[in-house]
Image (cartoon, rainbow, N blue to C red; front, side):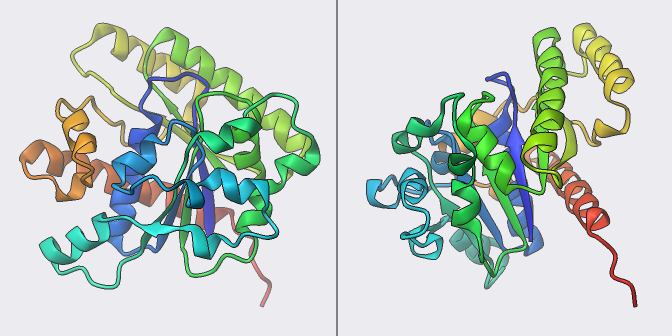
Length: 274
């Protein structure tokens, strides 16, 4: 099982959009997937079509990780039913541990080692999933570091703009420091250039800068700005279920991106001597 945190130091770069785009691609590919919404704003939960329920909120799991079982506190995304109805895709799994304000008590910079292990404890022994996607808040406070402690890899999301690129560089340094102190097996999964406008001179310049700064960490494909993405998310639909050529093209990009992320995870697994 691969556990991937989707992170960004800067808000507004489409981190949650990448999370839900990858979840949509995983559903289409038949990969049993769990989305853990650690952002107190719970935007990923909303986009995945699950209704708020304070009793099942992920913050409740974090408060008592040894007494509350994750399997009893996840809900299936309605995307699963649509996949079956639209494409005949049966027996697909896309579950959500959804976010809310309760988790906000842990989003502070002074969490100790014990608190940083809370999500790791929640996920311990989890079975039946091929992929866990953790949507982190747009900060480097406690919730993000808690997610990193529970993850194999961190996928960074950046918009090709000055402040976002600088923030990505700082986040990579933060990952390296966190790895040295808390999580020796943690690795970057790469950087997704999101909301790219091909016609923008500034974006073209920043993309070249990102290639020089980050090398092979900058993943392909890049995700262009999608005019109707807010409409898709507002309707709580998977991009793979939305009609139109633009949505089909975006879905294909997320299929490719998911393939890159999953392939990297397999390559990082230790080889067993035979």
